Length: 425
Ligand code: ADE
Image 1 (cartoon, helix red, strand yellow):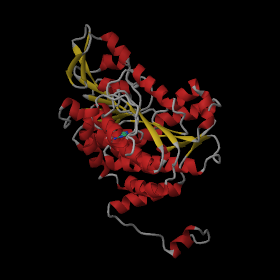
Image 2 (cartoon, protein in one colour; image 1 turned 180 degrees about the vertical axis):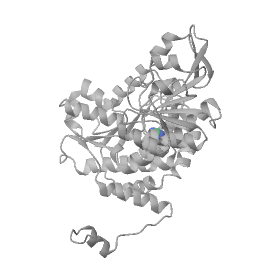
Image 3 (cartoon, helix red, strand yellow; image 1 turned 60 degrees about the vertical axis):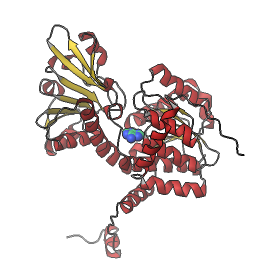
Image 4 (cartoon, protein in one colour; image 1 turned 30 degrees about the vertical axis):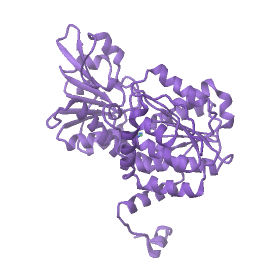
């Protein structure tokens, strides 16, 4: 009789596995591109013997990525990329049904979160799949000797890529890293349509407040901000955008949004969503200007965008009104500010993150980046790389095919015209 594989883990409750398995398989129905990669990996085993640490939001979609890596022959340890985003039933099913070591509990403390990062690094990974760069930064700071065995890393987020570029500038990146976020099939869809839908989903699940007719302030007009603004408008909100980049600000204006400084938007907003990747974009003086009952939340990677320390100093201890809804009564001001999801990613804290259909393309990029790193072991220069454009286009083609949509191809005449200079007016 085959011996049962022993798996180390730190999760909430293994008995949640049956529900997690149902939900993982449900998400898989919407992930046809990743499924095709999984079927190929199953046959070709391109990741045989590779040890991976994956730091990601522990969701049904991530479970399907981990299944894909496992099908390719990799040993993967999964840890959470955010203390509040773990789906405990998914963690249980990965341990029970797929024998994946998972270290993630929804609501874990920052200390436990960091303990899980360090435990995962103990496995001497060859590849790190990171989401925000906490694992890579910890390895570079505390376990520099491990970088010698690293084939490469991949990074899911804009925030994480900024950190990698800062490490590169400081001369600390002695391995290649694939900026998955820079693939077009990642940021154009995940950041825009994924963050757009799931942020509104988180706000609505947390508050159950009608958005129609409300003033909704989107702080930051990158791809995430565009998605949030577009979907808030679709629900009938009156959307204001704030920006620091003049080009993005003109885009927001021409997309039909009101644009103004955050200090002007502060007294007007019923809802505020931060999606800048920067620190304290909503600060003490903005809280002072906000109206009673203003609802503030964040959909950027880290919980640094809203200055919650300042809000805590200005307020009575918060009252929990509903799950993920805290009311801060401001002292001597006769008003409250409402914070959702403790200022962490509201779409993952109060909802389930991006729907599977967009994560299909993001995680196809992740799986193919890992394969690319392994295939090109020792050949890629240290530093930040982008996945080749043909891989990006292949992911898009497979997605279109799965949607039953076909498109045109260039005719020989078009190709000739595109490569010539003689024909003009
Ligand atoms: N990031 C945003 N949404 C996600 C999801 N559903 N799974 C994993 N990572 C995510």
